[in-house]
Amino acid sequence: MLLWQLRQLFLINAAAMVIAGLYTLLRAEPMVAPGELKMLVAVMAHSAAVVWVLGRVSSRHVGFLHAQGFTRDQIGWHTFLASLLSAVLVCSTVLLLMVTGLRSFVADHVFESPWFPFMASGEYSLPFILLLGYAIVLPLMHYAWARFNQPFGGAASGWMLMILGLVFLIWSGSMLWMHRLETTFFLVVAVSYVPGIILLTVACWRLHRTMEVRS
Image (cartoon, rainbow, N blue to C red):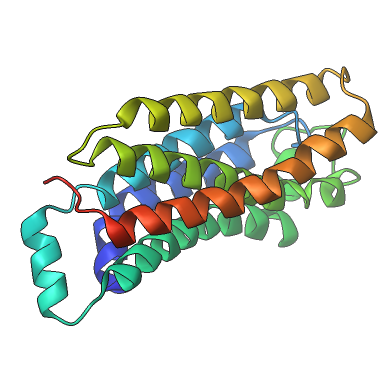
């Protein structure tokens, strides 16, 4: 089932990997988080596309999956795993270009950036921060999509939670980029995301497990 879901995501993930790779190679300035707000927006766009593709499964498809022996739990967790692997593919592309030195070589020899190769190792944390961004955004979007597709309604609470979470993520990232957040406060904000990610993941699992999704 996981391979079937990844096949549906192939074009989207391939395009995201190419765009992330080109941006990494063509960026002459150091890519240090949280200054790469453009990449945060790209994470949101890619996450939205992944959730939309995985959420288009109709009741006929779900019936077929049940007939093949897959339970609601398995369908839900395979959906999350396919989303996570999509995020890992993009972040791994960026990390690979950095650790192999290709990113530094292009910036140094093609763009003649004065920052390289000295700043190369300072960028290594960015792919992992992007992966954290995926871990925040994907549960928010999955939850909103699942609530939207419930036959009893209740979409407003899901969309509002997603919007508030994304606004808070962008705000905290931009404030840190402009050095307007103290380190202690930012750590409190960052740590607060961890239980939020866990709670949203559990909420999505319960929706997938107990509710019928509208075709």
